[in-house]
Image 1 (cartoon, helix red, strand yellow):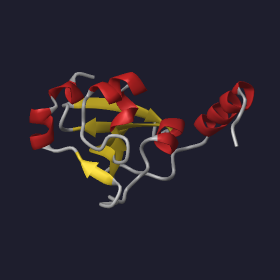
Image 2 (cartoon, helix red, strand yellow):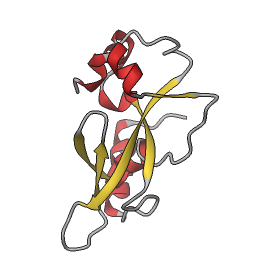
Image 3 (tube, helix red, strand yellow):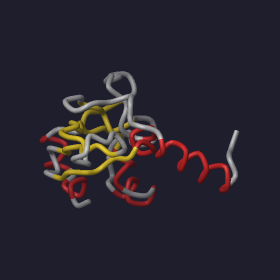
Image 4 (spheres, helix red, strand yellow):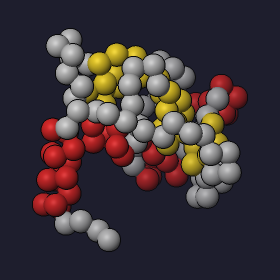
Length: 123
């Protein structure tokens, strides 16, 4: 099933009106590298098994974005790349809610993989 653009935009808008409830400060999640770029970028990394495996990095939620205790955005630390990203509820839904590492389909990007594929952190 695919959504047309109007329905997709409405879904995103509705999602972002809701508080984030699937993750909290202190949670770690596995985020697919596709989060960082388009298909051309991802394929261009030259990772082995990129077509059949999901290369993931760990993000850790560090604080709520708004100081007024709103739960509309949460800050996530990408420690390998030393970046902080702010996730709204739609981004959490799409990319940032996978708390379980599935070793049959995921490959965890660690320092060794980064040293072989340094373009990963050029985002």
